[in-house]
Image 1: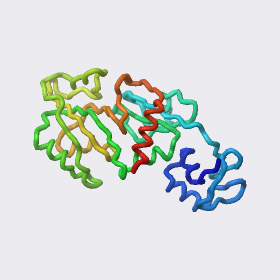
Image 2: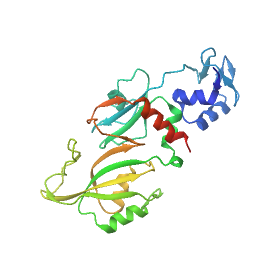
Image 3: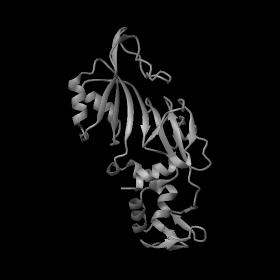
Length: 262
């Protein structure tokens, strides 16, 4: 069965179709030894596709959900030998993380070798929701919540309006509160012996670097725990920190529906 070359490249994990079209235009893709032209269709079973000297072979698609623990790097590999999210997933093929969670954050992370799906899920055009449970120092009042809901100004521009609600009111404690049903999410001990904390549920569809942390800083609060509880309809229900599982066929179908229905 034939398929458009750019689609085959995207499914091999080289990025979005647009990025793969650029690779073809740049002349770095060959089919059966000839420089490929944009728009050509190929048969992956019988034809040889090479990108910058590396032959591509059609891979079986795998989709994994990881509840990322603290201290694990969101990357496919690390030159310093640190543990990565790929090390947490017993996949049979090379997979990569869809989006990022920083070292001191936990929660839902999708890993796959489906490059086209990954590009769609990350593109802001498709408004894929991400839900976070965020614990910050101090009391978050209605003024700050209203500002987050409207959108706050960051150094790389204003954020889109967020869905924000307070789910845990401040209390004097020596450490951030636990989140029901999970291991403690705290990433740092408070400097003072007695401090107050507020936990919020924040839903956004953007995906800027450290966005939720910077949003909280913009309204005067430091994040001490950050957990992504939902991504693209996938939740942490039944998945302990550090655990990973394959997506079900129904979940994969739902993901593709979210990504390609618009």
